[in-house]
Image 1 (cartoon, each protein chain N blue to C red):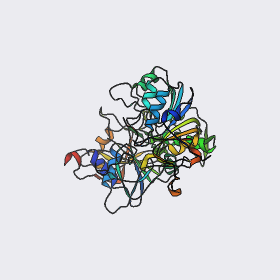
Image 2: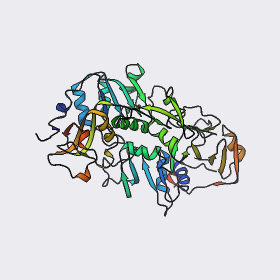
Image 3: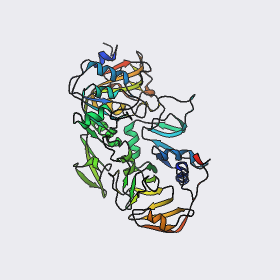
Image 4: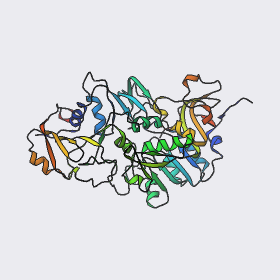
Length: 228
Length: 227
């Protein structure tokens, strides 16, 4: 049977997301947010999620809706500030009340922990964060005369990522700075779902492929997507 | 004796960016330095979201929603630019491939410790982004900040009072009153604002200052709100 990873709707792609899942969500700097998938996940309504996302909330993303809906138990991110300047965001409120767990880590460590997870490396040492509050209690070893902190890989159940084009095999391309965390997240999740502008039957030209099909399970065509 | 404004501080830092350098400019004042790199110096500006070769801000006609820098600004690309994913972008940063990062800061200690990410704002969540990666791993770390806090407190200190971003990393500080080098254990003033005495600068500091034998005058052309 010919391989075809394209599914009709975001809801179809997400309907089997279980309670307690670890969910990666791509996007940074205003580009690459899988907002159609985030909205669909909100509507599916799984609970007790751990979301792994660079910004706990971002003004161009709908991640805050998952948090406000009470679906999230834990956030792993590099920026945990609410985008609501006028007061406490739902995220900050829930965190203050102890209802949501937070792990804030340096952005490069965040990216590398995901990359390591996808590459079968359970842990690594990095000089980043040594001597700061964010690495308290972590194992330290000296290499080449410098202190390094041990960081563990992150693996997940589902990755929601945004790309530009896909083919039916699940190969992906990105536009400009859209890729950010998506390639690493695609490798580290058991089920990677890509929201794309166009999903074509015919194979993409090989030199253009930025994420190979093996890392992608489902593809949803969403045009230009949605933006807050 | 008018202190430098934010554009003039950025200009002064930009004069020290050398031909051929790869630099990362933090959000706020540092990113302004990209506009003031002297003509004839071929410089690549890296942004944490994976862009190597950021160009000027995009005009509305050229702006593309996916062509943004780490501060979500819609930008252009310079000739020879490339774009990679976040894991590769931080491989550039951690791997020592960035010559200089210019960062904003709250405090710097005499041993080069940097505090620039957590002001301990009550009830606000932490926001570290790529600051720790850049501060720990760029080959040089320059800081642009005002010499004193709005309340007059010292930002150049024996020991930082705010949570650290990285230890022993800052090599140079550009401020509205002075340019200061950070050696292994002390501050060395390189340039001081015309008309400001060494005693007054020392009085505004939280650590002992040394003055370079060739300590000069801090100057910048009229820029930004002064023009």
